[in-house]
Length: 181
Image 1: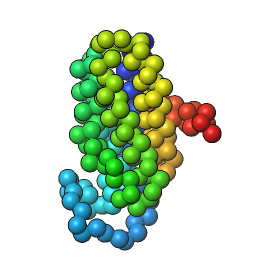
Image 2: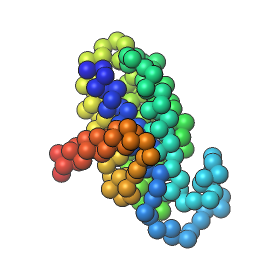
Image 3: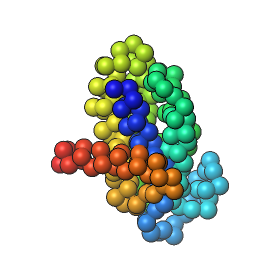
């Protein structure tokens, strides 16, 4: 069960990292007062920068997941912190995106990461309870966001295994989205 969960988490991360590209049209508007954390945001739209950072976040998370045999609170928190290192700057920034749908999906994904981190303490205390809450709340929300981001702009990974993980996450997100309709 833990391995399945770890695999699903890995797929989620892969999806995020592969979303670095954007088919979104640039509006030509700029925000000269906006502070940026990376040179990426000064050279590209926030939409494009998010997709790039999302893909990187997933790839980095998957790198560290490969080395862990068992999921613990500490390990899961490290996974989430790895993603948040790249994505926390997009929290509460959905209105800054050129494409509002990308902004909403990005916000949903980051919120799911934060929510998952907040409930991580349950992993070591009551894994079954944590897994159920995680799947019902965090996994569903994050994979739906991944599905939406990929639908807006196709996300691809050079690494075949990462692409497979990402594709599984997209599939889960699609299923959750259909269930919600």
